[in-house]
Every structure is written in C-alpha cells, then in structure tokens.
Image 1 (cartoon, rainbow, N blue to C red):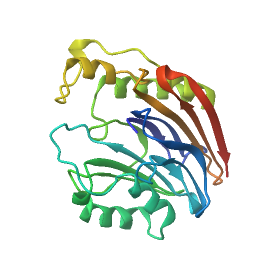
Image 2: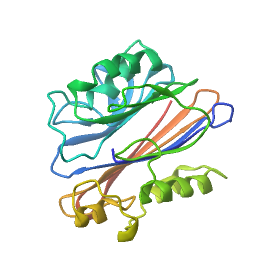
Image 3: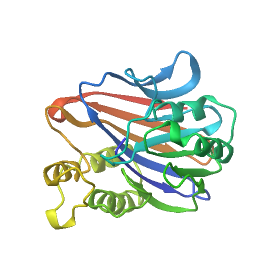
Length: 248
C-alpha cells in the first residue's frame, strides 16, 4: 500500500472515511478482497507470495492498513510486513497493546507504517520511531514516509478528501484514487530512487506495464458500527480487473 488518506472523526456519524491505493509489481500474485476461510469475519486482500495483507477489516470493528517506507538502503529482513495487519485483525489485543508489542518486534521486518483501530480508537506506528501514537480527530495522509509527510501526492489527496467529506461516497473516493497526474520536478522528494522513479511514484494512481496501482480501497464506517469496504482491482496499464464490496 503506497497511499492512504483518511478522516478520523470519532464523534461524527461517519467516524472513519478512508481511501487507499496499493502499488505493487503486477507479477506479484494476490487475491482480491474477500473473507478469509481460515479467519471468519476477516475481509482483506491476500498476498499470495508472502501470505499477508495490505488492508482489511475484522471482527469487533477492527481495521488495519500497511505501507512500506521508501528507503533503498534498508537491508531486507526475514519476516513479511503483511503479516502484521493480519495478526491484529485475527488477534485478541486492542490497538494500543498490539502496537506496543509490534514496536518491540519491528526489527524483524523491513521498515513499515502500520495503521490500526476499532470503533473507538485509531493508532499508528512507524517502525523507525517505534512509538505508538493514538490519533486525534483530523484528516491525515500516509505514503511511504512518516505520517503526514508533505509529499505532493499526499497533500493533493488530502485536499481532495476534504472536498469528498462534504458528502462522502464510494464513487467519489475511487475517483480521487484514480488521479494519475504526476508532480512537477521541483516538488518531488529525494528518497534515493532517482528522478525518473520519483516522477513515476509521484502520482496518486500509477499505471505502467510492470508496476502500478493494483488495488484502490475505500472504507466508510458508520457510528452504529456498520462498515462498507470496497476494493477495485487493476492490471497492467491500469486496466480494471474487477470490484468487490463488503458490508458488515
């Protein structure tokens, strides 16, 4: 997952409104959003290469999403980051306790950002900082750096989300996630991957023959506990492969 923008408003009738893109190589096998047979009540996409997920919902209002941290100098680690969201969705620990434990185990994984919560609270962990943060009401953006790092795609998506919050709906949020305009060179960050790659990764939606946005996810939560999670899947060059929706 390479971009997540979300509004956390625990006192609102729609406490969580979230839009997220997962960017990955098309050759990496995965399954779209569905209930996991071995984990009743868990709805998420599935990474068939390593067995984890990038975003999902679970029993008792549980939610989890993950991004990596863009750092070409980081050494590979033995465990898959995608198992962390799944552990929370399937496990008994609350958000704070889970992230306190995850912070101790962060060195087992390549660098990551982890966003988890339930009906009542939302928490964030950056594996470099290793300090769990409880998020207060507000609009946030997360890509492959720290929370609210002002990369062009993050700032643009947050501004678009503010507009969508006037009357939130899945269609408008999916449109937000499909913006393919690249940022100007002067605004690009320097994360050590080279100018051409920075350009490619600067748009909200990415589409090439080999790498791009594989899934766009929209989650709308209601104060009475109802949730709607929609995932649209894409193939090479941004071709739509299908759309799944879960209401629970």
